[in-house]
Figure 1 (cartoon, helix red, strand yellow):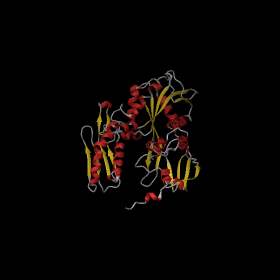
Figure 2 (cartoon, one colour):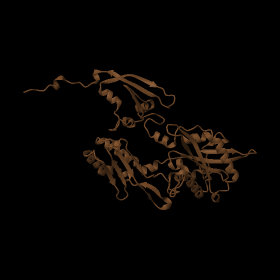
Figure 3 (cartoon, helix red, strand yellow):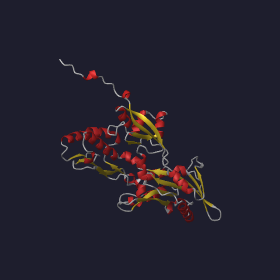
Figure 4 (cartoon, helix red, strand yellow):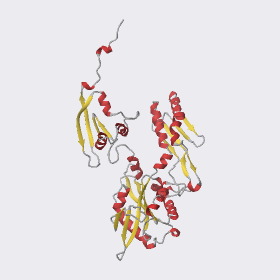
Amino acid sequence: MWELVILHGLSQVGCLRHEQVLSNGRCPDVDWKIPKKGGDFLSVVADITTISDSGLEDQNPFGLLSQEAYRLASKVGMNPGSFWCEVRGKTVGPSHKSKMRLMLPEKAFFSAFVKDEIEPWFYELKKKSELKSIFECTRGSLDLRIIYNPAWLNGGGSYTSYKVATSKISNPLFNALKGKVKQLSGAPDDTLRLVIACDGGCDILRNGAQAKSHYTYSSREIAEDFLRQHRSVDFVLLVTIAEFRRGFGSSTDYQMKYELICAPSASRSRRVTVSSIHLIEEALRDALRDLPQPLRQAYHSAALLKRPGVGNDLLGGYAMRGREVAISSRGLMRLLSGQISIEEFQRAHGWNEPNSPNNPFAIHASSGLMISKIDVIEDEDSDDDKISFTIDKFDAANTPFISSSSNKQTES
């Protein structure tokens, strides 16, 4: 999606071509000719990348701890809102490659830790649920606690921020930029090379200079260090969405935010001159200023895409109103055509999980009800339609047969 947005913007200035083959066989996203005065042009080759914190989330499974606490609370019949999870972090690795890591079990051993240590605590807690209690584990590389307070209604959690950059080279932004070096290395010597780094749910990009502290680095510092180490790349354009809150009860405004970063003076190639910097700045300003206003932050969009019923089809999303059930048209076609299995279909809707709402079709079928009407509901704002089932036709043949004699008791 970011690639489409950026290409649309760049196409408004000069001449834009997509995925032109370089001498090394690579096909970067952008071949851009920016007009100069006198009929000449400035040639730019660029590649677009989207950066997220998904890898960091896998290494620091705080969300998994919260999910397990919720699951176990529901399992033993307690209010999940009465629990609060806390995890501390520590810096690991040598200083130039350090990372912040949460002091949790590794993902491969997480299930065993929950089963052996956390689950027994929940069962003991159930016996004295009127009392406050704390589960705490602070041995070795672990430092976590789950706090229970029966007076709490809305629980939650807190943890040390593991998405900050404690090293200039060991973070998602630097890794993504480094991955584009070979993609641009085959460009002609007189062509400027640009990496466009877009926010796909990356805290370093979103927070910008605000992410800097006495022991962490900002996105600008990381990009400058990358350009210092890789002279074959001339510029980095950081693209994210700025959030402006007007005050309590007011709507939030979102605006595109760009930051063009040039290699430090001592590390610049001969391609980079004062005039070329000015020209590319002006061209980018003209190209990107009229892009549509975003509707939400990038990290909100990234979280939304993980929800059922979001994507190029609405598989997993469903709505119930009385005895009407609406599901994804494309999702149903995928099921009926054999592209996905019934197990995948059930899993997408959450109908196979014990703590999720039950399958509405199974509920109606158990009451002896059958489908009486099927409608196609078109949605102009979506790439998918909905299939609506009305399930209100009672059919005795769809109910279990019960013999009256089987209910009689033999008296002696």
